[in-house]
Length: 196
Length: 191
Image (tube, rainbow over all chains, first blue to last red; front, side):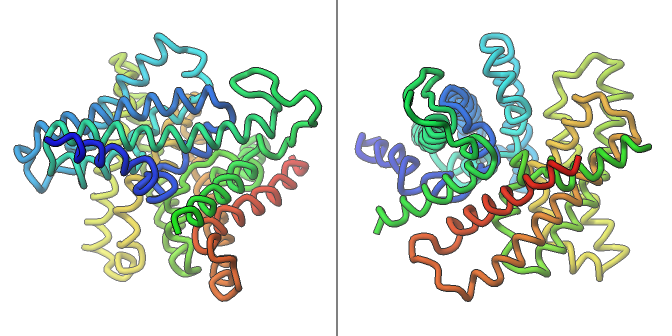
């Protein structure tokens, strides 16, 4: 496959078809874990791992899955990779695993993954599906990281756990749920006005 | 008893699943355009929530724990939920066409509503007994419905107001959700 097309499949997930800001998918985890930049990267990594796994398997199985039971099959594939991610994080990154909590098993019901399996991986080649998963995963992580950085800097005065704004009193509401809703709303509006 | 009442009210107002725990946001943003839709969705969610949480609890207590298969939790629960939703759809279609027409279109959406899986997992992880599971589930469901109805009544009005171009639609809905969440924080003094 030409490099240009592959790059196109990758870059569409970043801005044009960004799963969070553009397609409004996977909102729960984005808002919930975006209190610290470290959490954002951990969640993004788990999400990308599951996306990659499910896209690879679904594109390999492709047409051998009977159309009627395709959704249950996708769900089992996604649930298996989520369980793997859950157990791996529990073993190698217990601190992040603990702070992400219930949102790791909830990757199963994240609409981004099943949407990519259904709309892309089941119809495209292995290479394109891998690139698509990486692009979507990066787009998701990017939004999460930006949102978490804004919230952590304004709400706690820190970035990646380091103090960055010594003179400013932290704006507590940014760390609380309302801050997440309002910041994400403003980010969406910002992206929209840039696109025009 | 008193403890259960406090838990129930707390889940509706203070630890509301939408405003405090960020669960069930996709339908919250997707189906909150019209009041009638949001009531239908809310009722369908409460119904499926109750069924799935109780069956998940039974499976965990009587199958997974005795066999030491807790690591299969995620896979088993999501399959149970998906099957249940299908089953509910078929039963409703057969026995109550009127109810099916009212709730039917929301049922497929519910499988991927994270609040369903989340409540099942939270109940099991906190080691709740059956009664506490039912109370937690009802509180979560009613809290979700309250959030949905509040949001849709505001959005119906937003449609006719002059919102800046870039904020139209979802962005303003998020900001409104943020403001409702601030208002709900006032309830925490109640407990």
